[in-house]
Structure formats: structure tokens, C-alpha cells
Length: 166
Image 1 (cartoon, rainbow, N blue to C red):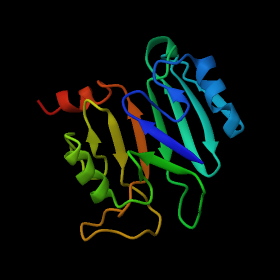
Image 2 (spheres, helix red, strand yellow):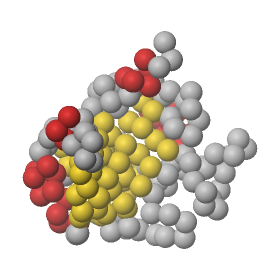
Image 3 (cartoon, helix red, strand yellow):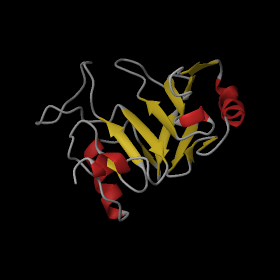
Image 4 (cartoon, helix red, strand yellow):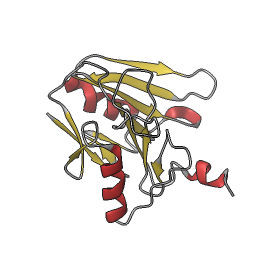
């Protein structure tokens, strides 16, 4: 099975801007899910997985009415899966991170690596994590060779990180 990333529109069957009911319906074929509601700001998160790939669907902000981001996680050390998370044909969790970022630049995207463990592509919006405490192959800089999560948000999802640098 493939989950195709379509930044900044969605991931697999989950679309940014979808309602809670639409998002639950979109992930229901993957199996069980839980919906967690934040009491303070009414944000919601759908926790599910597509086989061994954990998936969090975020409905953030006042009211938590629409999907604002989808995050998919590497299955973890020693775990294998038949599910591929694809970005323009590259499997995000098996393609070396440096190759993913190089191809992003070739597409005309900017990869912000200011925080080495949390690079992101503003405007698209894609965010990655290269943090893990698990025993994995690492680069000379100590970073995992592969990303450990990928987040798809709307075009302005990472604007706050850019503003904090100005």
C-alpha cells in the first residue's frame, strides 16, 4: 500500500481542510482510531495507523473544525512494513534524508535546515524530524540517515518558525 504525500493538500486519503467526520471516514479503512480533544483550545487529534505507520491527523486552532496537518511516523527500529510513504515517488522513510532534501531543492523548494533535527520546506509545507533515541544508522553529524517523521501542512503552516527568526 502507498500513502502519497500531496503537499500542501494532504496525505493519502486525508485532505487538509477536511472536517473531523471527513477525516475519520478517510482513515477508517486503515483500522481503529482515537480522537483526542484538547480542552483548552478545542483542537483535536485523530490517532491511527496504516499498518505499521503511525498517523496523527491534527485539527488545530480555535474549534478544531478542520484538518490543518497530517503527520506520519517511521515504524521504528526493527519493524518492517509494506506501506510506503511517497513524496514524488521517493519513499520518505527509506530514502536517505539528504537525497530527499536535494530532490526538494531540484523541484525549486527551499529546505530550511536551521534546526538540523527538524528541517522543513516553507510554503509547500513539509516538515521532517530526524530525531530518535533508537539505534539507527547516523551521518557523520550524528543525525539519523533517514527521517523519522514527515508532516504535511498548508502553505502557511511553518510561517511562525520563519517569523521567529526575523
